[in-house]
Structures are given as C-alpha cells and as structure tokens.
Length: 127
Image (cartoon, rainbow, N blue to C red; front, top):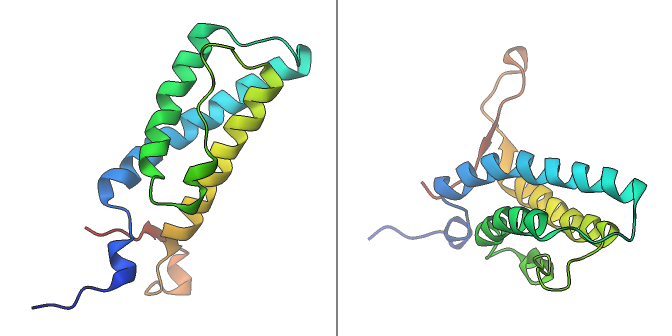
C-alpha cells in the first residue's frame, strides 16, 4: 500500500483550481466596480441585485477556500441590511486577499524549467 503524504491530502483538486481561475477575475472586477461606487457615494447601500450577484460568486469562493485558515474570516454580504459601498469594498477585499494567499500557496513555479525557456507556473493539486 502506497504511503500518503499528509501535505498532498491538503492540496486542492483540479476542479477547485479551475473554479478559482474562473472566479478570481470576476470577484476582482466586482471589487473594482464597488470601489468606484464607494468613491462617489461611500455610505450609500448596495441594492439587492448587486448583493445577490456578488454573493453568488463569493459563496463559490468560500467552497474553494473551505480548508484554508482564512475561511473563518470570510463573510457574505448581508442581503437584509444591504451593506454600504465602503463596507462591501472591505468585505470583498478580504475575499481577494484570501484568494491571493490560496494562489500563492498552490500556484508555484515549476522547478524543472530551464532559465532560457522562461518561468512556468502551475497548480499543485491532488490530481
């Protein structure tokens, strides 16, 4: 029976990394959009449609990050009280930071590359 490396069991699977690649630019775009709104009207609440749309993506991000230490600090936007633009920027920024930590942890430079070929990065995954 093959010995299982404990650190390998903590690696994300390829499905998570594909979802990450899809969601990261979308959540980043949401952050940029809400930042612009916050510059104009910092204390104005988001509307229900925006909260629902953003939360749909943030829920999926939480599924990806469920095994990460940052998970406990990630909260969805409250669709009842509707956060202000500035509060939403803070909350979405936390998701972006958690996603960047995830990528830094599992998206690494391939050690087998030659310098002449340039740097190549890939996901460390279970499969």
